[in-house]
Image 1 (cartoon, one colour):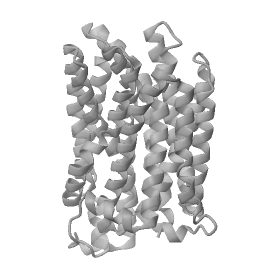
Image 2 (cartoon, helix red, strand yellow):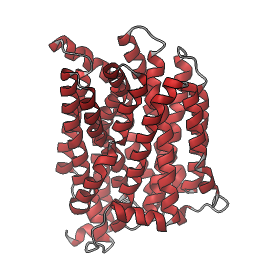
Image 3 (spheres, helix red, strand yellow):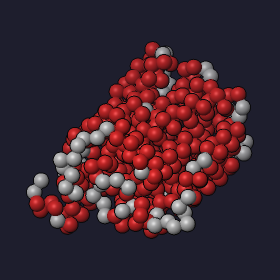
Length: 425
């Protein structure tokens, strides 16, 4: 790396280029993730014949990061952000091929394993927000981070609806079984993204941030180091727990909303269209307001925004959980609020974790945070199906609201003296 890259102007130019590449790839990745979210519960319920297992596909999709995070962080430590991000999307390509094979062979277990790999796309999408913060000035870190989160709006909102279009196109071309078209489209999107990232994300923002901080010779770290950092650093610990609980609530409610909607409709194709619209609005809520959330976190610090996010999640559970099975308007409002609450929790928690560690410590600590989110997602998906099957969708929302409130004791401990410089420096 030449010394000219060490100037403030050149670093700002590199950061601008990195944000542009991450923005574009987030659109493609968002499309892929939106497709996977839209059809996951429907596919698993059709293959198993039980809504008790429907949440399994969603939990493994969002929790698939728990599988890839360990090797992905090792790759990131060695090759930078572009290597880890490309690895995640590459795993999702393999997952798409696995699910397609399972559909043709009618093997539910194989489909579930494929969904686990598909979750790697969700991992890469989440990790991209950290890549956006590597070279960002402290006072703009939340804003830059949230810009990349926002970019997923374009793809994710359209993704569920594209699932229905891909289905019709694939059936018109081949006459194949249900859902194959969706996973063909998802696999192609992930493949394109996996090729673009290594080619264009140069110089790598993480590697340059380490050089600028004089940490190029720092020892390579693992997820275990991230865990130890969370134990030792109260700010990191709070951010990790807040992100995990917010993710649990979002996945738990979202995973079974498709089933809740379909139980009120007789026509499968109409149900898929309705689910696509509702989940598209939900995903829009997840990402559309993230730049505003990032600015608020930069100005007031992450803790107040995390508390607001908790309140919004509880409101979302109240609205969605009290909806009738055929009241798609109320369900949509609840799911939009769910997305906004998740965005507040995820953006602010990421800012809190990133600001509390050095560039050399970031991949392992951020990876541990995403691992915790993935495990929380798996738990939410595994729990949501049986709760809806044996109790109700409303009771699922009550349970998730209680989980959301569990983070408040940690957040209220220092709310009397919130300071953006303290937790985002």
